[in-house]
Image 1 (tube, rainbow, N blue to C red):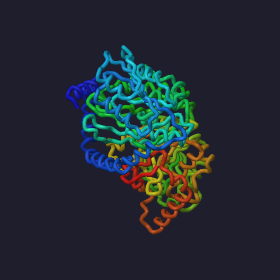
Image 2: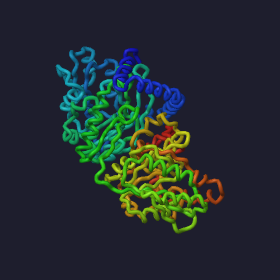
Image 3: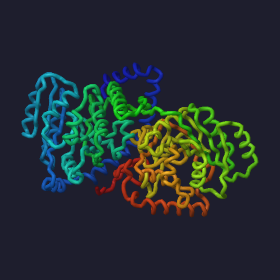
Length: 608
């Protein structure tokens, strides 16, 4: 990066954050880079192997050229131009001329101050290229809309003037359109490509469409392809979101169609050079303010009252806090058996920190034997917000215990909470309720840490080792996992029952937790999957944080009896959800290995 760009970034940080926070951010970036260097090297080596094994050979490209599709739409590629680098533009044009699908047009609207003769020579290479010199710079939105007006295609694809698409990109788009003739919006995976070396790295393998993930950050970005009728309805991009105009139009797209398809293939190369957004994203704070405004306005159009703020230290990430309607009561269910020290730690943190007032703590007493436990209960009974109810059966069946608790409380909302947790976030209930009041959401989970402050839970992915697993386990606090997913609000397949927030009514709707098949393991995942079957979304909210001293109250699966029980419940889970487990978790990506839950890139040949 040029020294002047580094100085520019430093000035922006100092103005926005002050000296102390700027120094903290610098140290954090260095810390992340030092720890992440080996990991990134390994990731990019795996990606190189992925490219070799998963992108078409020359022979396959020739076959693509010969293929005749039933539907052969024209694809209009929209490129706004301004002082466009000739070298990169020529490479973009060559990538289009060499496409294995030929029914396309390139629509260029040039807002540069004067025509570039070298540019004109490149444009003459193919009669499918349309060029308009605007005689003024209308900004990225105005230039883009001018290019859209030139389009005659069935689909509109948005490109930047210095980026690239692979030669099989349009073929894959058209293949997808033939499989999904009703599709109105398509997006793809992407990677970065170095400016001079054409070295590819940092692949972004994306989840399928996820509205809460999108509201948290523009994970879709490139390549975005709109059906022409949908683009006409959206009336192009809007200048008031300059710097985040693509984010705004994608949010508006989501309001106007559900006919959305994600292609889990790298079909866009985001160019990284010294003047690109990919290189100096921090140097464009106006873009992140525009992104914040795009989310705010989207929520207003959807009739959702919410506060939007910048989310932590990652640029372009937003925290959405929904306004609570009314004053609903929350019942916090904490099962307990003789773990006074941990329970006391948990309850004290709730009583001390919680800012929401209308809640109750329900201790579900499960066959405790120690005198000190009941002595502590007597102390708790003096506190108005705390009640103790006795679970009537012997043994440990977590699902039964929770169901018993849910049926014996009068709160509109329920928190399943382990006794071995400690609250870190004062306004946790406000954050939980805001999401759970949305009728499309079934359950909400939190970010949990081990004692050493590494991640214990950041959502759950299904299919890991044929079952399910917590994401990004053992990632140190302050170090970002894959593309910062541990610190962004996301839709996920499930969240842990150690801290699970839901409406009482949804327990009733799905028949509560499964007491027969999942007494101890997988009950939380099973519950979330039952919610998903009903059409509900599951949300991971990283801004709600707890310490979690996992398994201290129950012990690990070390006895033969516990091992046998775990194997039985594992088989129950596989059998019950075998059809879902055959598919890729929609909030993950087929290009990730199922051997772990850290978004590790696969290196084998993947058949799509």
